[in-house]
Amino acid sequence: MPTELRDKAHIDVFDRATHEGWALRFGISEERLRKAVRMVGSRVTSVAAYLGHPLR
Image 1 (tube, rainbow, N blue to C red):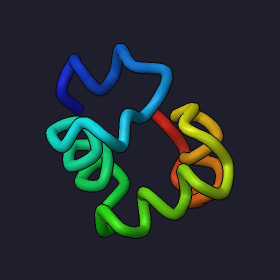
Image 2: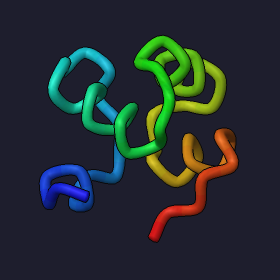
Image 3: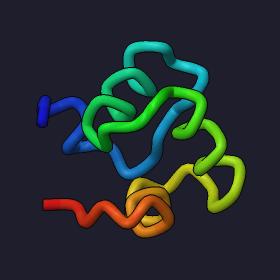
Image 4: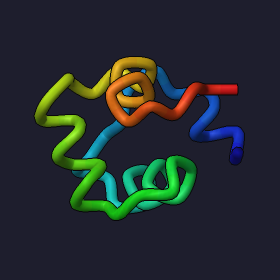
């Protein structure tokens, strides 16, 4: 995972590079990532738990 993603506690869905990177990291579409953020908020740990993807 790129350092810039690893060091972030929140997913900025308004920053294209950031949400593209997280979508790739989770192996999901950008739309699914935006939906997850709408459902549980932007905290990376919350989104990961919602998606069932543990962070390493």
